[in-house]
Length: 248
Picture 1 (cartoon, rainbow, N blue to C red):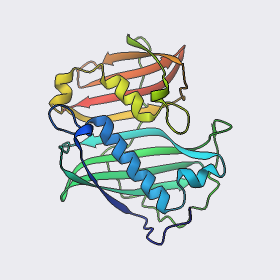
Picture 2: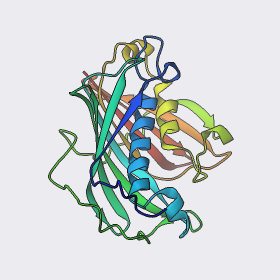
Picture 3: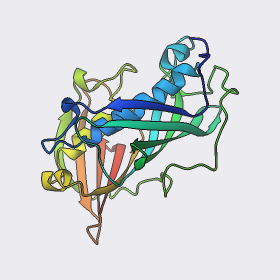
Picture 4: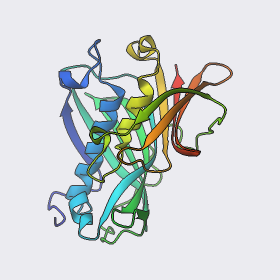
């Protein structure tokens, strides 16, 4: 698709929270929060001419490598939220994108994401084949108080669940969708902490892709002062994903 005449380097998009996206207490699920953020990033790439459809001409797609989300509150069923997004950096095969979520004029979520260009045939990163110089970059305007980081994985942590990758776990790039990793791990968190919105922030590292019928193990460990819990997902002896939940 060509660059939209309505293209701007900073995009704002409204979303109405519906009941399918909420937990029993009526608040937005963390997984659906991530879906809304990703859909907003996709909408910006579409008007800017670097969407999935544009990139597939060259067998390319954006894949998420790291993500940090900081939360002061979650929206509720019926709320209309505004998500604003812009790009901090974009060069060759890598991009850092910022996103913020507002209810009315109050910021409730800040997010920083790190994306890589992925060749969907060769299954490896490569330089973006499309022009992107029309995007103005905003390296100094950050959406989060802290940037994303490499999560320290404790390889002696407890194994809590074994999982087989099913078709319902896969996305259009034919690997496990990034939100599915989060969903698998959150299923092993005390539900009272989720319903009480005790998550202050969370961070995810995506290291190796998972495919249909892969067998994985989910591991969990609390840090020493119980201020955070870390999950990792392994296939054989390889770490594929890590998640750190930081408590309020």
